[in-house]
Image 1 (cartoon, one colour):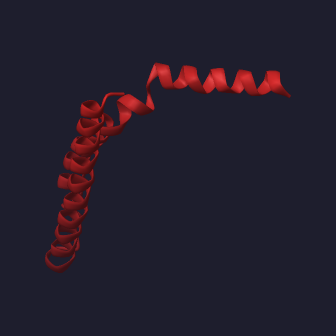
Image 2: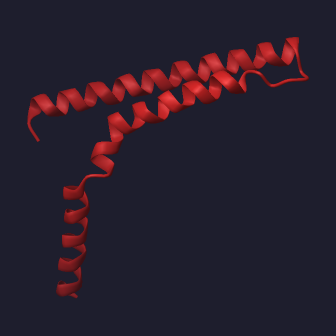
Image 3: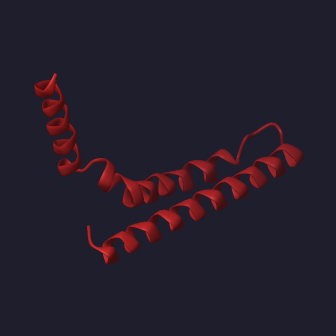
Length: 87
C-alpha cells in the first residue's frame, strides 16, 4: 500500500472514531433527558437507531473494505496452506 493511501485510510479511521464518540455522548445525553422527562416512552431509541445506521455505514467505509477484502482472505488461505505443508 502506498503512503498516501495509508494516510487516507488512517484519516478515515480517526474520523470514524470521532463520529462514534460523538454518537455515544449524544445518545447518552438523550437517554438521560428521556429518563428525566418521560419515562413512559423511550423516544431516544429513534435517533439512536437512525444515527446508528449511519454509524454502521461509516464503519464499513473506514474498516469494511479492508476487512472484507478478497486479497486479504486469499492471503490468509494461502498462509494456512503453507503452514499445513510445513507440518
